[in-house]
Amino acid sequence: MKYRITNNEKGVALVVGTLLLLVATAVGVIALSTSTTNVMISGNQRLSEINFAAADSGVSVSIPVIKNAISERDIVSPYGEITVDVTDTDPSNGIPDFIDELVGELPMNNDTASNEPDLSFLLNNTTVNVDVDYLYRDYAKGTAIEYASGYEGIGKGAGGKGSVEVYYAINSLGIGNVGSETEVCAIYRDK
Image (cartoon, rainbow, N blue to C red; front, side, top):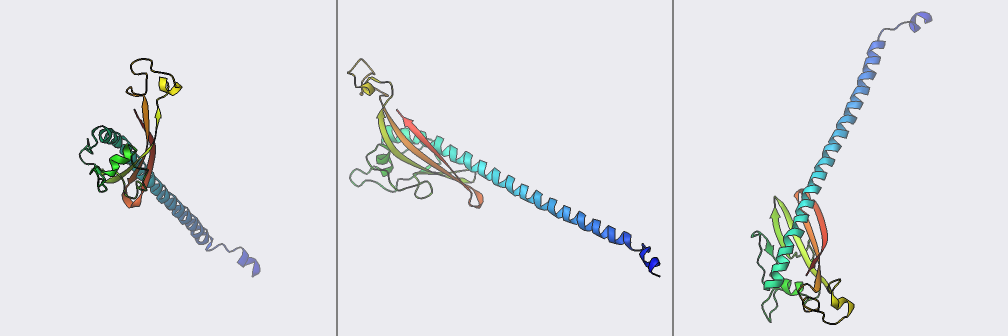
């Protein structure tokens, strides 16, 4: 009787088939989980690239605004859709603090790209906030004034065009969907 039970192979195919089906299900679940993770990573990468491009455009857009604000002592956006922070003005002359900050008459304030930005605009459903801060001014490299020499002709002294360089910190923040943010920081030199 014992010998007969050990040689009985009825139901083995059912057990082996069930085990193979269980292994195939586990492999399918792992593959599905991996592909979902890859889709999420790709989506996050896309959001990061969109926000980076928007933040980088904030740096490019702020340069003509800086140049115009310094030369005209007025804030006129060359791009139309840009909102410039003009809420704070100097009561003595009515000039926005943003301009006073750009020309170095005010110390660097506590505004940031995420809190009270100087410039703000919308670019393809991505909000771009830009903070511009005056850093310092210095004599242009290679000019006569840098080497403490005397006046040596037109354009050589400190009074000539391009003899003083002004440096600005530009922090641009791209804020996209689902709270994604990317910040670009740049140093701009104006002659």
